[in-house]
Image (cartoon, rainbow, N blue to C red; front, top):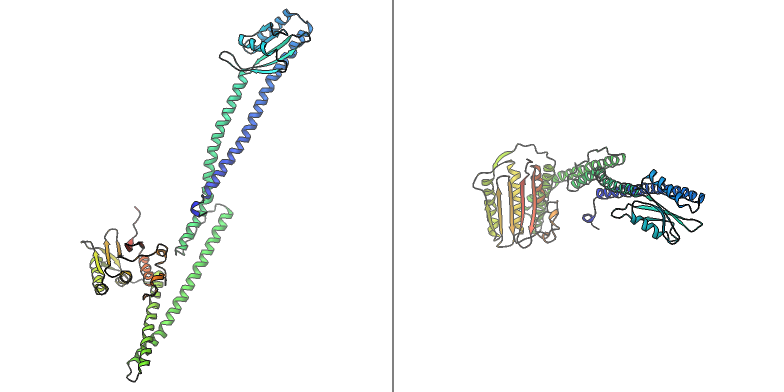
Length: 461
């Protein structure tokens, strides 16, 4: 699975918190609801048991005395309320002998179910004018049946309210868990994102990138310190390597200059044989090429390190570009390439070093002419505000996978390795552009054109 398909870590932490809160509250809610149900069930079962026991004792004291049972029913109904107590003494055939109830429907249901021997306790579902009733029945020795009903509607409504409150509390708990989980997860992963951003900057060439200490936790702080130490050591190692390479390149210039001078002197001697003359010319040409490469490398290093403190000058880019195009027009005509310019009619002033601008634009223009086929077109475009300069050439193309490497030192595409050059021209152009705080980029459309663009970075509003 690619990194683009992976979910962010803070998503996982937030979902874990959400699910954990939900499961925890479900367990707690189930326990609370179970305890509430058991409590209310025990209450009305105790009431039913007490009523049944007392009425059974009364009937046993005067068996068959219906008047006494009627009187006892009336006392219980008066004490607990007609709407709460439902009493029935029925015959073995289900006929009502003594009854106290505010609902005929309840009495009929109690009489009907008194004939069901296996059902000692049952519930009568609530109707339009009937509450929910829990009934306990008991059979006497003479076959008569006592049915005692207790109104449980209040208890059931209370349990319903408890269940509703638990459900709402669960939703609230899940929402709080999700929000807190997201906040905590973002807070935990924020330092990791900062480290990833700094690592990306370093991979793109900014070796000075560091991570600010977040002080989130001991482990995160240790990771940040270790990352910064690693980045500092890598920067120092790279600086040492660059310094070593610059020193070597600087030291090579003197012997190469002497070799070229000796070869040139040898080539001018009248006594020089043809073979010696050819060797002297070859040594002189190769020495010049190596000196050019070394000087370009030193220029790139000097530009990257910003050691050039020479004052800038004001350059009017329209006339400056016309002069450069005049210099390259002969080469373009010889190669059968049309060299065009799209320049604004108003002056465009910038502050820069004339020599550096000449080298930067010249390197890109030379690269465009080199890879443009015969009868192709090279177009130079200039935009005044914000400053933008682009050089486009038709016909050639750069593979998408090669574009990130075109500004690297010594890098050359496979199809251009047979052409003259050392792969340093575009690297120097980028170094100059970056030293001015500009952005340089390349894009290529297969079969159409390749464009190199230099643009000033827009200031935030």
